[in-house]
Length: 272
Ligand code: PEP
Ligand code: MN
Image 1 (cartoon, rainbow, N blue to C red):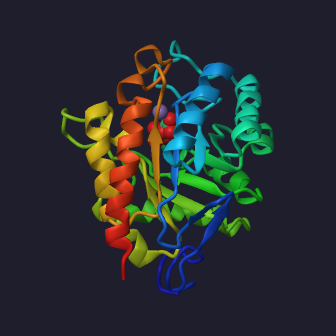
Image 2 (cartoon, protein in one colour):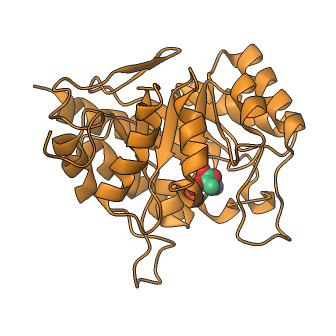
């Protein structure tokens, strides 16, 4: 082995890792879509959004119950109550749940409710959290830190695999650059770089890269064209009243249009 990362490297494993969750497969050239609000706000809110994203073709539902916020004065999430609402969504719609585990302290609780555990950008190098995720039997979405190199990101994934959990999905969500026209800069070139270096699936989150609604749709189309293994998109039924990330959340009708066109692009690109 010549790479600093071992278990995550193509050198170690040539075939793509396939991760099955519900109806979705990450890593087999399909394009599973994860959609939902940034944060769980109420039972009514998540059920309404879940029904519309499911009708539009989303395969998994997202929503944070524990939210890592820049300001301590911003909404921090509903905690356990939010997880209970997410369980209701799964029961009523059949959609598997993606939700963030923010710390080791609440990990057991989040793990009980989540079908996929998310580790957020701000925690990409929280090594105790990565080790704990490595002992879980649930797949993990590992978001790229906002200033992480490809090597740092893959080393973070290595922490999880090294503890025994081989089901890691990498998620590019934009990196910090000098620009002011978007919240972050979506680093598309990392998709083929990841695929060269690693067997792990890589999905794209255009919402946190864009920061504004208008930029989300074109980035999602590009994600399909770039051969991403999935897309995660924030959708809200009343984005103007959202407790977090309202400006980048799509209206359900916009999400429906996006799904139709993105699927068409994916079909062309995936054709051998
Ligand atoms: C989120 O998914 O809502 C989130 C907080 O993402 P990130 O960690 O990429 O900022
Ligand atoms: Mn968000």
